[in-house]
Amino acid sequence: MTTSMSVLDGTATDSLPVLEASLAASLTSRRCASSVRVGIDIVAVADVADSLAVHGDRYLERVFTPHELACCRNGADGAYATESLAARFAAKEAVVKVLRPEGPRPEWRSIEIRRLKGGWCEVVLRGRAAALAANAGIAEVAVSISHEPAVAAAVAAATSVSDEGEG
Image (tube, rainbow, N blue to C red; front, side, top):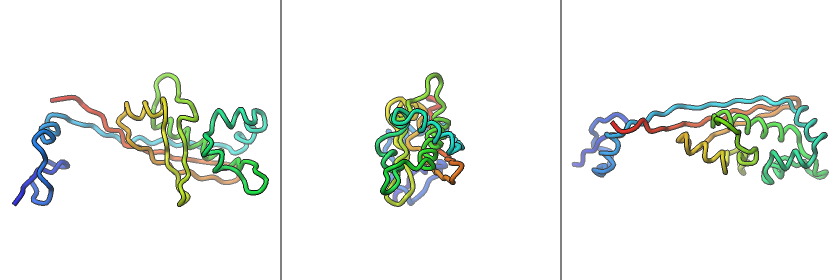
């Protein structure tokens, strides 16, 4: 019979495979702290429509990735659904709140809200946004977005794991 140490609570179990000695030593000599980070944002759809009317393509190219813009196009006329743009903007703001930058914020396009085939979205980070996530011990950011004709909202959440050092 094989007995191993449970990573979760330090108790011996018969069902987990044996941990290698180096991994077990690492787990007992380090303490990791984790915390849940949550960001939320609400955006008036009219504000996004105003920015689009005043700044046009300059606004779109500064804030949104090609994938995001493609997801926000209406059918035959090719116009942008401002509700969808507002929801993605809210999601980007919510992700920034999860990343907690000190100093300059990451560029808007370094945070991509990617729509998947099933309709839900995932967050893809690049550049400074990815560096902030890595430094905070964040491997993945989850996001949920919603919109109505007048308002869009988003919630982002992540688990941050940081080393407390050796001890």
